[in-house]
Length: 222
Image (cartoon, rainbow, N blue to C red):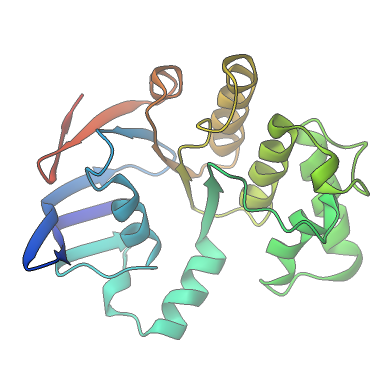
């Protein structure tokens, strides 16, 4: 379960303080998919950074599976994020010097899974995203949709409890996005992962169990 209570986050802009999040409350059951919409600059990416422990709130608490991540020291937050959170980004964030399989395997190796087991799990995950025949390919040789499939495989291969997706269809054409949306949704659901998606894509939002809008620093039903 994911629980936010009274979460606030402000940033200083010039001579004034801009409060991006103003007492955000949210509860998401395990395995649920939630889409968060809102205008650009409303704080959606800030919220994802807080949920992952990359950033810390000014006030309030964030609990992931009963762990209040703000109470953890930085090394413990990093370890918790590595073990329990998977990320899918708009611009893929793949490592161009690594092959398709090596990009996916890296998520396992960072969690101590290496050798034949890491390779087996990586190849199996690539099969689930439709790239089982491309493990040795260079990621730069792939289309945008194929690169996002690799990114989804990397996000899910270590079986995280939470998957955070920041505009995962934002760099794809409409037809490719239509293929990626059900793939991301079904694979997260298959593994029982809670999926939180920040998006402007109405089709992606429609695939979620709940749709919320971030407006004036707070979440409300969209």
